[in-house]
Image 1 (cartoon, rainbow, N blue to C red):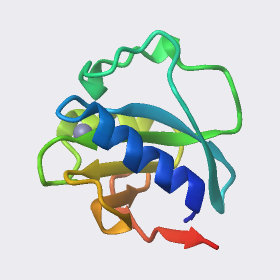
Image 2 (image 1 turned 135 degrees about the horizontal axis):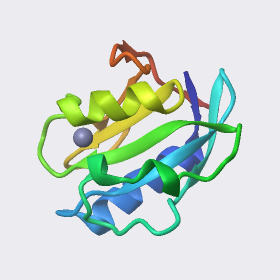
Image 3 (image 1 turned 90 degrees about the vertical axis):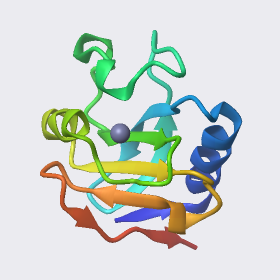
Image 4 (image 1 turned 120 degrees about the horizontal axis):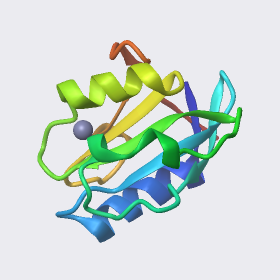
Length: 121
Ligand SMILES: [Zn+2]
């Protein structure tokens, strides 16, 4: 999966700014590239990711997955994360502290398998 450099910069910056709360958002793009981050209407920063209500998701076929930060130093998905991944899209990003660069970002498919993430130049 490719990610636009400005999208990567945005999610890293947002995660740093909101730390120690969780940053959450949705990803827009296509099967090859993550092109944009959407903040979820009605969601509150710091609310646990797993509590995002599915009826709050915008009806938009270009939504390919989700992004959220882990204020700890692990980007392993929780059981609640895996359940959410399974219901939404096919590309999910988890960022871990200290959110410095792509080494602090992990990408998963909707079954929770790690997938490669490459910056689109
Ligand atoms: Zn999580």
